[in-house]
Length: 324
Image (cartoon, rainbow, N blue to C red; front, side):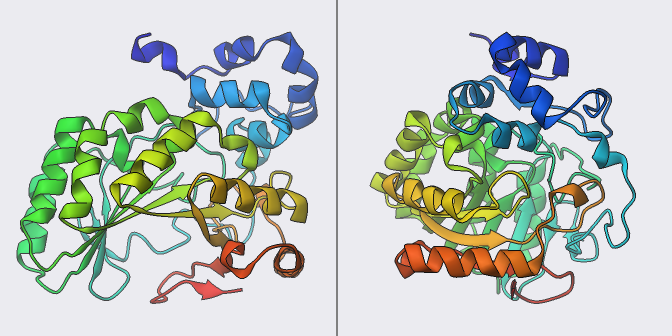
């Protein structure tokens, strides 16, 4: 199967692939006239994620994550292009530094899919052909950095050569002892994640390695995600998950409980449950703080403490996540 058959860039092809058996579900998610066929934030979905939708127990939830809705066009007070203050914290073309002695690398503009609630959906992404050199040059003059966080886009969407070059540029700096990767690929493009496994298996001998997956619903986890997580854990990676609390997707205690328990069976600990970042075009996903706190209190009664994620919000300019 070539790469072109592994992703959908046209909504019509995606809907055709889901087939008539999903028609009623799609109509529930985007009733007549509510599907945006020409979204400002372009549609992209992997074939793997489409297959997850086809076999999901709650396909509506997964469809809401990926199908463009006309509500994205609404201007809502308080929702802005850069809700978490990425741009003011930029230190170089690809480096963001919000937290002391830690640096985040916007390694690529490419993702395995385009989630409709993305907080960087309005970010002025550029693919930087010499990202490894730029990161290396910046670290040369910042010897206090002990953790580098690879973000994007999705850092595992870099080609194997580009990804290795980036890691090697970071490894040249002895102050960096922890490498953290934020990725959605275990549930969006596990095939691409597996392309990096020769290198990923080596890295725990060189860094303290942390992978933070982004899984929002238990139906996103399957045998392929389990294979990715299992190999990482066996190799010595610490595996954490962060989710976004999303209306109509995971805003029930039952769903959040299932998500935490299913993550744990795949070797991943729940880490953060984020309140929605107020990016333009995502307001229809918002869950109130009152309801969010009630959900956390309910799952705290159902689960041991190590399976209860921290409910947080990111506030632009703050030096850490803020508990809600």
